[in-house]
Length: 155
Image (tube, rainbow, N blue to C red; front, side, top):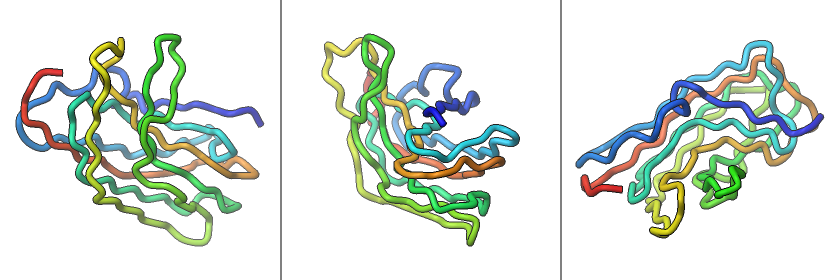
């Protein structure tokens, strides 16, 4: 199956949240329903995080929906001028989802989003990237959130 890109419209439809002093959160609660997901290079775009944000935590849970084990990475992607994505940073690597049990993953490694001033797009996209997977799963589900801090300075 060719790579599939799905979008969590709730978080991806608008610009990233404006920076304000304090804590921000990008949450998601997804069940793909009849849309298949979970083979190599499938990507779920989860939300936008502005430049200068300090990511403090990421939590992710997979439901028990995948028939074969698949591995995922929670990544930050840069939007290139051509509209394509490139990996900017990996928040959580090597997560496994399978039908055997629900799985929860967490990172508390601080990550500062620091894009050069000459970049046309001044935010990164939070994405769930399938790094290995043999078969797609109907009704793939995941829940989670990423927390970030800001000092309130403009983007």
